[in-house]
Image (tube, rainbow, N blue to C red; front, top):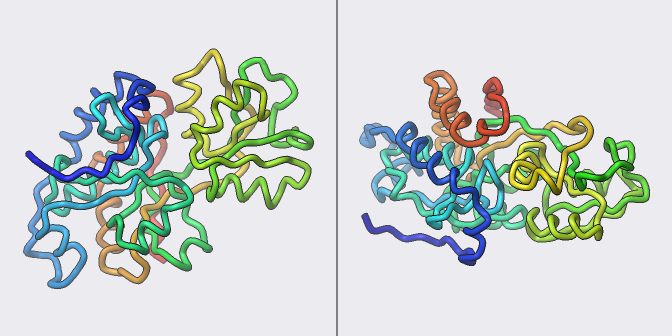
Length: 290
């Protein structure tokens, strides 16, 4: 089936992906496809528009192992990707008809506001500042900020040891903001994407990388001889699905879909076939219908 794609990534990036990810994605796709009674959607609603078009544009990350990472075939794979497929399936949209758009931390709100994407599923922490300009459905997972250091690092055992250190994170991310606001004796280095922090960490240009525990777990799983995670999680990061501000019908639809997937096992299957290869299966979170 022909479809439009906006996957803007160098071919070299695909070489960094574990081959197993592609297999997991194929299996999980079968569990997230469903048929939908599209005639039941309210006329003029976002659901009706997307169902009639037969396609949806989803913003996700292309460099996050376990959650959103471009596979060997050029398609993104991971838990966020599978959650998006669950939502698309409830709209009667097949995974092959999803347009994936690479979305990094600093452009997620802009992509939603400018109608470049219909939803963003991209390790996207729900917070009050972001809710001023977009809406969130979910959460669908609760992560927590952690630290990754070199495998032989002994001077950093937790966030209490960051004074005088240089910490790397992604521009526009909540972990970067937390370091900036609450660790005044720590130097913050930001790049466009978390993967941009990996070589500086290896080379000793920075002392640690900080982001959510699940993202760091993916990097450690791919580089166990280079990196390790230290200390306990020191924040709570509820991952939500970003959508246009004020679209209450669509937000309710996504929340209903998430809750149904928690109950019928689709959410757990999506986790177990992606992030579950490294991390234990958590309990589903409680959706916040604010």
